[in-house]
Length: 130
Image (tube, rainbow, N blue to C red; front, side):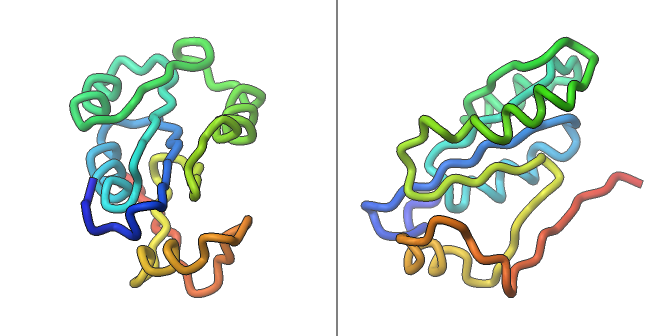
């Protein structure tokens, strides 16, 4: 995690739902720039995602039934995974979603009191494997 991400008293946590190992290194590196804690939700993958995420310093939580994607489980994670976080900012995304703004760190620092992040002037970079 970058030591110059924002003021020392501010924290950010990311919850990432993962389906593919090939996206994980880029996604984790992106969030490590400004997040204090990264949690990867893994659907019992067998492609090495679990080990890769742990080796990169992430917490890994298994969910669902191996090899089956449940919309109900997916929605429950997205709606509740952040409820016990004490971070100032919480980001909940899929592994192929990378929010980008040229000055994201400053926005996080100055908008500390906001409850919903306005998406104006933001880009979401969707990673697609062709």
